[in-house]
Length: 391
Image (cartoon, rainbow, N blue to C red; front, side, top):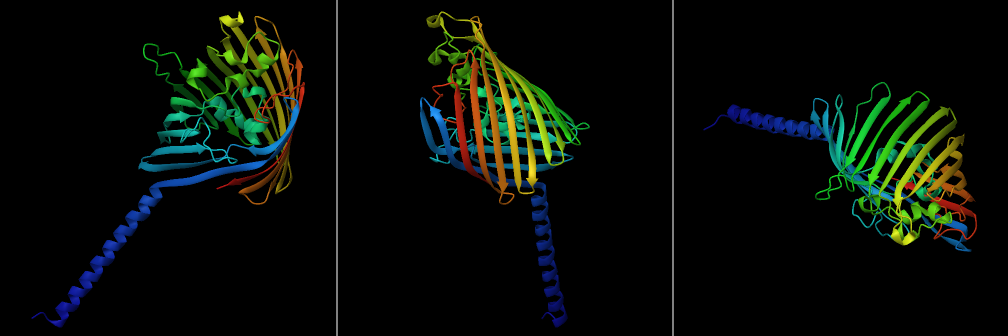
């Protein structure tokens, strides 16, 4: 028969074993939580907009911004290496329909590895470096997509993403980072067709930020089919050009861009320049099989914090186009103004106005996404009031 002392010792040993096991399991759980994370996030926007002229008539309706939800996460693998992923879905708040051509994760879908000393490699559907590094300096990137450069001809309003892409971004070296991306065309027998190339450099130090980037897409209407090429190249069609809207299919697209911003406490001033080129437009039915279009976009904008919860913004964009071989020169002037009031860090009320004036050989104004169609005149005005919620 076991003594009372033996029974007591046995009980103590069991309690100690259970406590030790619980401590180990707890430590493992805490370690796992510390080494990896998955975040659910989102950005919701809806509002009411008024457009004074859309095909000769005014239009009032819901404004549908870039609403989305997503999952992003990382896992620490040790020695400064981590795995990462992002899955992001865009949708229309007014209807609930998926955007980006109905894709499940149409905004972003990639996985990759990041190392503190070697940089980051990601694979999947991603932003090119003009969209990622230049757009944040522009009104559509800062305030509202309705303020895009005419036709979003330079993709600074993120109208499309790049499929089948491999992207590399260097570590931060004294404020500098460089990046390069290649999107595979995946066309049998022609490795160049439908391919995409992008590269750039960015800098952030103190009050100053700047970026330069380049994008080239072969056969863009096929490589990025969600891009509305008829709308993007509307200035060329609007410029009394022989090009017909239903037959616009450029053989290539390229964008070169520079941007910078300086922060003066409450005042932030930014400037950007983008040049987009579309080659070999039209077809034999137009009598123009090798037409080219070039757009130069100059954007100057600033924001001022009137109070901690109230921000005002004002911007001006000048777009000058050139259509070859016709020599047409469509031009556009656009003024954007915005007022953001922060009810909290997550909920923002916005009032905005955008006005565009067509000039030169351009005949009709067309605020991208700001109306259901182009103005019947050279001017178009949009008024907007909406709410953002971030989670």
